[in-house]
Image 1: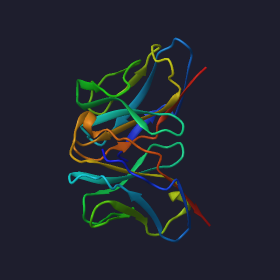
Image 2: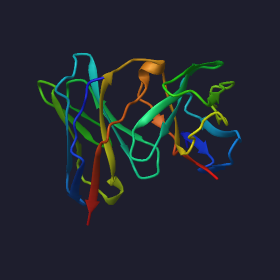
Image 3: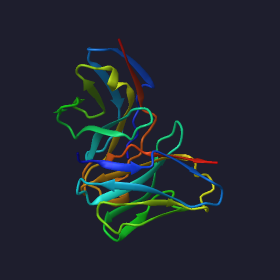
Length: 111
Length: 114
């Protein structure tokens, strides 16, 4: 089936540790996005990419990094510089200029 | 993006039509109305979008008033699996990159009951 796969579904991080969230899509979409959602809140854009080997910061990029080495993959690293990383992380993709479609998210918690 | 107003919650009996309203009185001529929903602990799901004509797909219908200041999402035969938070978003279509980001408000919690 075509879709967006995020893994793992749940992730725990120790203080001072970097963690990487995976996002893979087989929809042949050009654009990919990472959002953060806090309880009872809307989405906030972290990073986005419209083409392989290019990505741009969103509204809350500090403490996060990404790469886009392949069209189908857009991993997000939550670094130790992100002081409040506990959140629900959502990856989305779309053809350029079209509505976005989302994965099922990764819930990150701090031990 | 234009601001939208939705009721915080609605109930619907299973098998009946669910009609979810959205007010967007400051909508601009080039802004579309998008609807997404989010089932608890899952990613948002795109439902439908439109500019001024009514739209229908396999999931729902979108009715936009002639003055475009409000719209209604219709789920024709609601099921328990339609219980979710529904978000109405008004934004310019065709943007790329950061301009294509989605900004969700608080939405409407639809509860479908037996």
